[in-house]
Length: 224
Image (cartoon, rainbow, N blue to C red; front, side, top):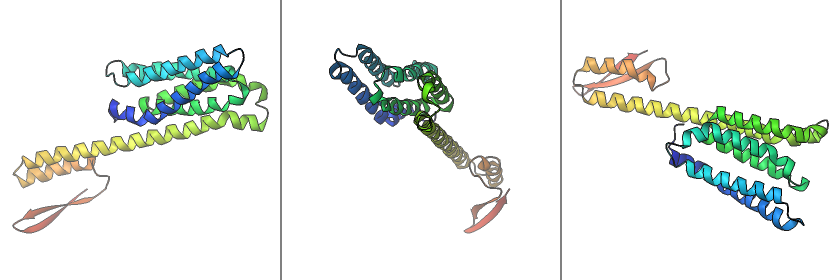
């Protein structure tokens, strides 16, 4: 990831708050709406709250976070979200769709495309058996696959943004490196050779001109 862990935490902060709010409402639902209380839903919600809080805390840990983010979180959250449809009352099934999108988005932001697809696949495979009896209906097919389609689009969008950011960072690093070397060089020939050897790493062009001022006049040199 081209971002620091502090920046990642800022990126997923809205996702974290939304997930915590939904899980808290699920806990209240299990406690107050049904009689007797839905203890299974309450335990699930409490475990989900704990998972989200631990995940948020570990982002601040430079030693424990990478392993947790790359493998442990995608697998554990995938299993947890995949089991959710079996525990939710039918009227609340949309919560599964919302939390799945939030979870996959958080994984792709913090761990990248590969981990996000692992997370998506686990959720899909586990939850599939819940929908199998009704998947012959178009409406059920649409309901089941829509959150995964949206999540796939999010994964690809985030991955492309990350790739573009990496490219820009590389270009800026190259330009900064060349600038420092030019400042330490007084020989025009050495400067031109240096530019010719490194500038293509920063600029996407087949040919380009470099202007050098000599005796008050600008001399253009063509590079290709």
